[in-house]
Amino acid sequence: MGSKIVHFLDNIESYICRTLLVLFVTLLFAQIVSRQLFGYSFSWSEELSVYMFVWFVFFGASYAAKLAAHNRVTFQYKLMPAKVPPVLEFISDLIWIGFNCYFVYLSYDFVFNKMNLFWKSQTLGIPMKYIYMILPIAFSLMTIRIIQVNYYKLVKGVDIRDPESQELDELIDDAHHIDENNNK
Image 1 (cartoon, rainbow, N blue to C red):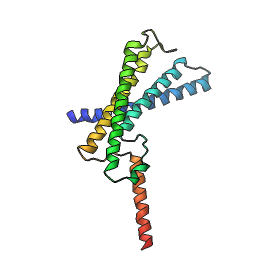
Image 2 (spheres, one colour):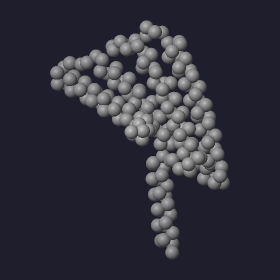
Image 3 (cartoon, helix red, strand yellow):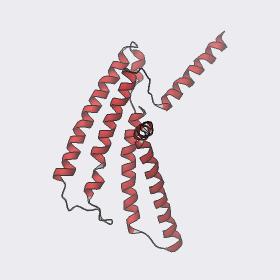
């Protein structure tokens, strides 16, 4: 039971992103069909789709942090001794965590202290506070994921890298092996 809960929480962003994607694509599809076939448009569906898409993007950013899949400029690491790049990545992650914590503070302050309680979405009438709550939530999750990735790298020795960069490295290694075999 406990491991199922841990597994669920470890993949929460993935589950939320999948659910939001299905919902907003289905909603947009229904809107298009309704407009084209029946000449009727749901006024609320586009607004809800936009809000779901925004939440999808922010949860996706947190999920990308978990996979260590955020874009980084790393070409300069190939010019450095092998021990330097991990230190530089750790320092950049500390800066990233600092930025995220500051943004969590600012967004929390905005949502809970500075936002007008009566601001509501145009067609749905949802208090905008609930729409903007994604900011402190997503940046908090992203911070947790950055710490998690660094824990796996530095404490457990697990190399978490972007799956696409791993695939690219394997292709480059294969190309080098083919080149070496052809030169023999």
